Every structure is written in structure tokens, then in C-alpha cells.
Length: 495
Image (cartoon, rainbow, N blue to C red; front, side, top):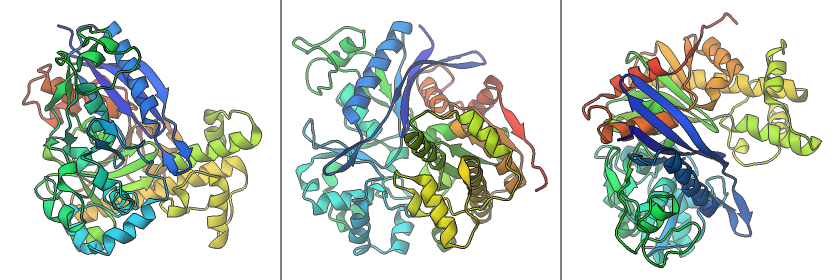
């Protein structure tokens, strides 16, 4: 049987379906589909175009099956916190985007019941105004939560449409703010205090578990046959008819950062990671959570990882600042910009550039990012970047400074020494950002692999399907990644 699995990896701006091959001392990825993930603004707010996303996922799985008819498994990961509400099999509206501003009301509603310090002791999460529990408070006030019988986070929703099984994978569930940081189970007491119906939260599953097998209509849609009679043409997302297909959907680290951390090519325990994409997740891996008052004050989060590990990290604004700036300039000029040229121009800037607070909430929403950066600097008496190259250099200097501060705090708060910093994801291709990070942290930076999230997704599936020994540790899987993919090391330079 073919030793291949399909990784569905969905980011905040794009998605992909990758074939992952694992053999004796071999690990490789083959992309079979890439597609954009663009939100849609309607009269009630900013939403994810989840049906288009699902259509592309199904089409991508069809390409995967045509390439490898003996596919062993499918795994799905995505960004965190966003969800759909279901009434039976029916979705009650498209999921809201976490950047929609309705969540500010939810913050007030939650903290009128539970204080910040008490909440941190319960869930161990850093304060982010779009965390799921705040979004659900807005849903409750609007009367939507009482209409629902199930809440499914994005990867769980797609798995439901593929299999008909309603489950919540625990690494992503840990980002909702409603999972007990100590037990790793739904926090029934907190859910009750907030007035949320306990029944909407489905059973938790851990990475490696089988969520379900493909429904017949889905199997037919992707080319495996066995469809139920009467299934219509086109994308089929029904959840009820027929006997399930034979291809399993395996739970992976469905929060994309959880999968990315699996694929950090570390060769020792004293490492830190930066999963660098639209957001930058900066932290260390621990065996137990840190919920001290100092950790809460520093706004560090304890999220679930694969094999029960804890991802002790901060969410730092990431390449969103750069990509939104580029979109602004392209709208103004009416022409596409060449990013490598822009980065080269930024690298050639020799004058000191202002370092701004990349985590300021003013930078969360879409819009004219260069103007907001200029205003932030001007309001604080800092020099304002002039032109595109200086703005890009200021963004990257600010991100590197934020990374250095987060890593210093992660080490101090956790007691974990950091000898090397691993940058994975799209940001690992940004040589200037990696060098600036090495310079500001004073640590070597190892960049790569780019597709860490998909790799981690593949590795968890492969272990669950017996393609590697089921007892293989994360450390052994990471050693395989280190051997299989090219890495680039950046050495700190004097500033």
C-alpha cells in the first residue's frame, strides 16, 4: 500500500493540499492544490468564505486521490479560534473572521463575570480580544448561541462535512479559552458561569485519533466511489446518508501552530521556535503549563501541543504587517509589487529605522498599514519611515525586536534556556527578518522548513497509520525533519 497521506493546511490567506510521503529515513511533500482564502464583508460583518474553502479542499483531495489512489489518511489543520454554529446538520451562517470588530463587546461581557486573573488561572491563555469565548459571548447576546446544538472550530467543521463526525481536536480547542489548562478537558464550571450551553461543545479527541471515515458522497466526489444513491453533483457536504467510505480522517494538531511545532527540526531541548506567517507564534515547548501572575502579566499563553506538550508562547503580530502594506501600495499604484525587490531595498537601508509596537491593537484590522505605522511613530515623537523601503525595514526591525523580547520573557518565565531559535513557516524565507532576529536575540537562527505545518500534519498521520512506529517520539520525528529538509543558519552580527 502506498505510504502517502494528504495534509489539508489552511492559513489565514491561503490553503493547500499536500501529499506527504514517509518511508525509511525519507520524508517529502508534494503539493497538489493551492488556493486563496479571502474573507468576505457583508452587512453584518467580516466572514470567512467557508463554502468556497471547503469546495477547494474537496477539489484538492480529488487531485490527491488521482495522484495516489491508495492514500492512507487525511488530516486537517487551520488557524485557531474561529468556528461555525450548527443546528442539526445546518450551519447558522458563515463563520465570522477573528478580525471582525464585534468581539470587543464579548470581552466586556465575559469579564463582567470572570476577572482577568481568575480566567488566566483557569485556561492559561493570553488575552486576545478575538479568543473564542469572547466571540461566543457576542453570539449569546445576539440570541444565536441558543439556536445551536454544536459549535465546531474550522478544521473540525471541515472534518464533519467530510465524515459526519462531530469532534473537537484538543490542540485547537485549547485556544478557545474554555478548556481547563490543567486537565485538558472542557471546563464545565467556566462554561456554566458564562451561560453557554454545555451541549454545543463536542467530545474532545487527541492528535492521532481517527475522527471518522469519508461519507459516501464525499468519497464519490473525490474519486473513490461508493456514493449513496441520489447524491447530487458538485461539492457534497451532507452528513447523514449511506455507509461511510474507507478513507479515514485522522486528527492532527489541528491548530496550525501545533502542527508546525511538531516539525521544528530541533536536535536538543534548549530551543525556541517562531512559527512565522500572518501571525508569529513565539515561544518554547514545555511539559507543564506556567500560569504564574508574572506569566499572565506578560500575556503569555499555554496552548495544547501534540503528545500532551504545552506551547508556552506569545502571539506576536507577524507578516500581516508587511502583506497588508503591500496590498495598500498595490491598490494605490494599480500594479503588482515584486516582494524580493522590495526586501532587497529594505536590506540596503542604512539609517536607523523606528521600532514600533507590532502588537498594538491599532494594527489588527485590515486597511492602510503604512499610514497607521506613520501615525503611530509621529504620535510618539519617532522618526516616520519615508517611502516603501524604509517602511518595510521598520516593520522587520519591529518584528525582530518583538521576537527578541518574547523569547527573553519565555526563557525567564519558564526557566527554559534558549540556545537556538528555529524559524519555521513562510517567514523562514525572509532572509532579512531572520538575520535581524539573530542580531536582536543574540542567538543563532535556524530557518526552515517553510511548510512546517503541513509536515507536522503529515508526521502525526503517518505515526497514527503505522507508517512509522507508533511509539516514535516527537524528538525522533524532528530529527527526521532535520535530515530531510534544507535549513539555513543565521549567525548574530554586532549591531
